[in-house]
Length: 68
Image (cartoon, rainbow, N blue to C red; front, side, top):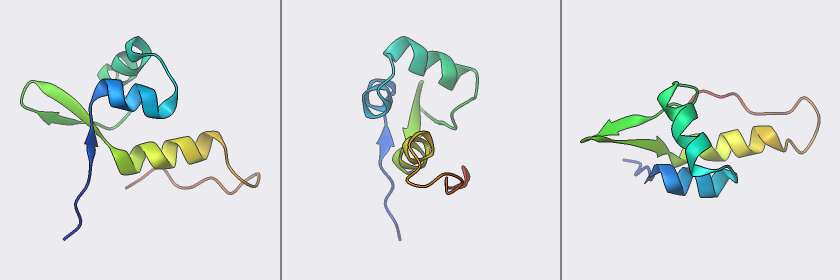
C-alpha cells in the first residue's frame, strides 16, 4: 500500500512558487485536482511533482502526463 502526502493550499502554493491567493483560485476553479478533507481541500503531492516537472521539462517534448 502506497501512502500519499496531501498538501494544504499554503503548502501547495509554497511548493509551486505561486501565491496562496492564486493557489486557492485555481483549486476552486478545478484547474488543479484536489480532494475534500472535511471542510478543506488538499492537493496530492504526486500531482504537484508532475506539475512542477511540466513547468521545467528537462528536454523539450518530454513533459510527463498530467494523470495520476
